[in-house]
Length: 161
Ligand code: FEO
Image 1 (tube, rainbow, N blue to C red):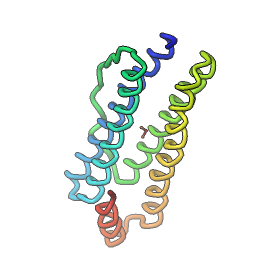
Image 2 (cartoon, protein in one colour):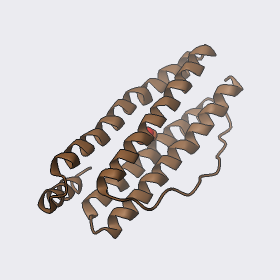
Image 3 (cartoon, protein in one colour):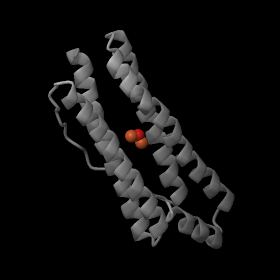
């Protein structure tokens, strides 16, 4: 494989793990706020990010490339409100979508069709990722500061698989 592309793929492994770390930080905030359903939702999200990282890990290994793991910085731990958490999550997902699009463009540029096809799953996944955060934001905006609505939403978030 082209080594510039390999380096970018390796960087994405770190970014996916960092994403999981950000969501674990959000889960910790929700635990502290007594919102265990939202905490569960974020722990599931963090687990998905580990799966994303591992998909790339396995792909590089399968292609005979060396997996390089970078440092993961400390995530943000304090937030003002559930709405702020999900807005920060959406903003992060939009950033990740940009990274995936850049990766996809590098794969095409290097004429690595196998990697481009592999990355198509991530391109589609990002649509879903942004959508799940957007839906939480919309519901939270509808609920506002009304305690009962937030309680019901927390219950709903607990059911995420
Ligand atoms: Fe792995 Fe949420 O993007």
